[in-house]
Length: 298
Image (cartoon, rainbow, N blue to C red; front, top):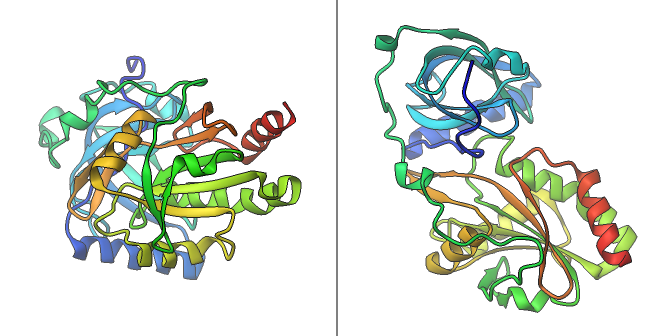
């Protein structure tokens, strides 16, 4: 049996612009054709998520898809993980559809079949727990940001409104990580506007300021909304973003053109205090709507 959860949701890492372009091309083909694609991989388990379905694997090259890296995968059947433990070598099949990815057919391998640390696991990222984390009731720190219009703003500017914020980066390649959070916000925006008008604001914060310039954020915003009056796409200086993200329990580390990172979405009240934190990528829009409704009704 596998041990208890050892890691929170952990993101992928990949190196090389050519590999990123290849991944996006394959993904576009998948979406365009409406087909599911499958790839064979093997690697070593370095941890498990808290949901019973997430396993973090240091995998070797997956032919025709991506080079070696460390990343989380989800299984659709949680019983597939019951016979595995941290450090085990395994073979798996990675499935990609239009808006999700998962692994199946997990097969144990001899320890000698998989090299250790094929992608160089970023231990400093895994151990990044020293920053005091925000909890419900805590005041959000002052943070200067720049939005998709190139305007300088501050988190304090949103006081008087409920604020839903999350952390992303625009080059995130897997459909059920940053793109999923943006799609969730896309679903929420019109419902929130219909119910609460401008009393609620959505805020997506990129932790990749070197690439996610205001122009890049504008292009990214157009994928999801035509209304940036109630949804802002922002970034900031590396120092400001690193400090703010760490306070929300979001830890990230650059790895080539992509990042290893986890996921957090937060609800902030009208006075700038944390109301609720959703970890990972499995929160439901209904839960967020209920939390916002309770906040505004108080």
